[in-house]
Length: 375
Image (cartoon, rainbow, N blue to C red; front, side, top):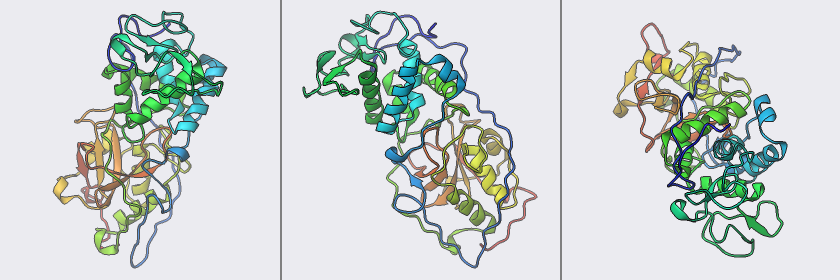
């Protein structure tokens, strides 16, 4: 039975009823990995598009999340295959498509009006409940079913190659939903793209909840505005890095670029956001707490005007607040950070400017920590 009931209106598909009893929980255990210190008389750090590792906007190469047993048991096999296929085709995490499909139509298993024919009371139709008229607007574009050769101003897509773009065909509807998410910046602002699909915070939380259920290893995501453009490479000389601890933490994080996100992951093959920065500083001989909330509280905090490479930058995140932030990245200088962003996205270089950071901390300056003065 769907968690959603009641009238729908607005957004791509309509207003959903309030979500109850769902929370996104970010809990992960510790895993020890061995890592050597990376030294030398000077340090050159380079990362981003055109360098080793990944960067923002690498849609075509984004690793897709593994499939949980819950997903295999709950999602019809044909829908699961299509979610994965369209996720790879459009560079959208398949679990987000599946989360939307679950909330909207129980992955096509709902018999409510508009899912398989017609439209609901507010003009949404198909298994992904895309607007075809009325209060929902014609987000699909053109008639609900029309020749694929017909040019329309919408997300209508012939996902299965049969020459017809049908909002009721699962392949077409899922492809259309993926295109809509891309239009709304899913590569850099996942929560914002989901919110654009339906303008309710509770809707975003529901989709992320099901994404977590369907993704093997779990799922969390930062709620952040789109980052600024990322330069092809970032270089730091020894004079820009405050000490060996910061240099080693950055070098460790750089070595993880391109690896997949995994909720609760602390390496060596996959990480979540706080697991990445914890292991980066562990490589430097500094033990910091496990979760982003604990890391923020551990501090010490530094003002934005004094941020240095090696500092941590925090964001509220979908599973946190501004007083207990749910996402963290490792500052590498020039307004950039390395972050484990979300399931379906590789560890990457991203800008923290324009993403409304909660604040910054400096692990190597914590009382009792001794860090060598030169990198």
